[in-house]
Image (cartoon, rainbow, N blue to C red; front, side, top):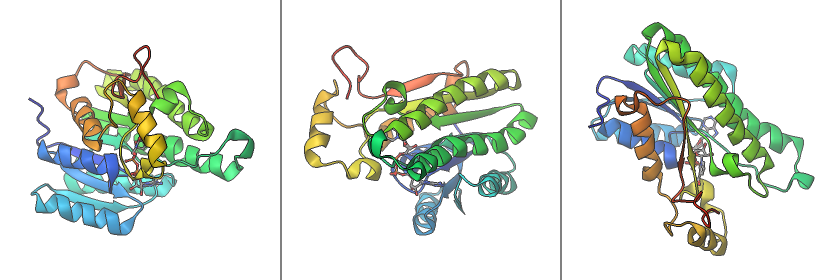
Length: 252
Ligand code: NAD
C-alpha cells in the first residue's frame, strides 16, 4: 500500500492537467500539498478544491524559471510544513514550430521553463533533502524527449535534457538517500494537447497500442509510486507511460 502520510509534496504547474491530477492523488494518499503555478486564479482555485477534500494545501503563485521564485517556492514549503519531502517538476510549456522557422525566443522560453526550471527547483529542494537524508524528486520528461518529434526541436531537447539531468542527479544524491526519477508520458489528454486538431488526435490515439490517449490520472498514479517508499530501490529511472508506444509497431 502506498502511504504518504506526513510527507510534504510540491507539484509545479499544479493548477491544471497532469499537475492537478497528481496533487489529487498525492493528497488522497496523505501528503501535505503545495500547488505551485504561475496562473494566480487557477492556483488558488486548485488549492481551495484540495482543501475542500480535506487535504492540507498551500497555494504558491510564481514562475519556476525565475531564480528567486523557484527558491521562494521551496522555502515556502519548508516554512509551512517543516520539510521538503517530494518535489514533482511538472511545469512545462510548448512553443511548436519547425526548426527552420523557430525564433530564438521560442527556443529560450521552452528551455527556461522545462529544463532550467527543473534545475532551479531541484537545486533549492535538495538543500533541505540532504539535511533530512531523504527525498524523492520526480521530473516530467516526455516521449518527445525519448524519440524526438517533428515541430518540437525545442521541446524535445528540453525533455531529453531532463532525462540526462535526472540520471546525473540520481548519481550525485543516492548516497544521501535522495531518489531522482523521471516519467516520460506519451500522448495525454490535457489542455496542453487540446489545441491539436481532432483528426490528428484520433490518428495519434490509433497509433497507440492501447488505442486511447492517456489520462492525467495515468501519470499521477506513476508519480505516486515513484514518490513513495514502494519504489525505495528505484533511482535514475525513466518510466515511460505511453500505452505501449515503444513496442515494435507502436508509437506516435
Ligand atoms: P498543461 O499545459 O495542461 O499544464 C501546465 C501547467 O504549468 C499550467 O497550469 C501552467 O500555468 C503551468 N506553468 C507553465 N509554465 C510555468 C512556469 N514557468 N512556472 C510555473 N507554472 C508554469 O500541461 P500538462 O499536459 O498537464 O503537462 C504537464 C507536464 O507533462 C509538462 O511538463 C509537459 O511537458 C509534460 N508532458 C505532457 C504530455 C501531454 O500529452 N499532455 C506529454 C508528455 C509530457
